[in-house]
Figure 1 (cartoon, rainbow, N blue to C red):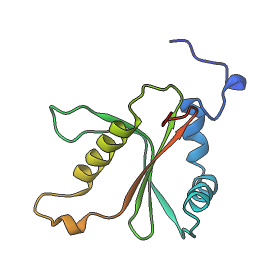
Figure 2: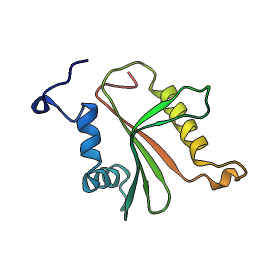
Figure 3: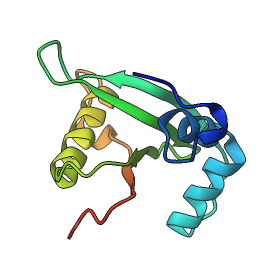
Length: 126
């Protein structure tokens, strides 16, 4: 796979998207705009991190995963190509995050709110 020159990168490119979203004022501002709510602080849990439910399960590579001060987590994904699987992909990502965030022996009530956000360069519904 050949790499694009830096000058040719756009926000849709994986590297650039992650670098831009790693800048806290931009990421926090994006979430505040999207949810129309003030977020005091965000903590980066991962960028380009691989998460899996168990050793035999399909792995998920998250673009940007952050958590706010109240414990709500946000997975922010850039989707360039339409593979016609967004609803099921979203469902799977949510399930994998829930498994990753809930330790053995804890009640389901211990799960904090979490959101999977797909920024699509195509119409994911039509």
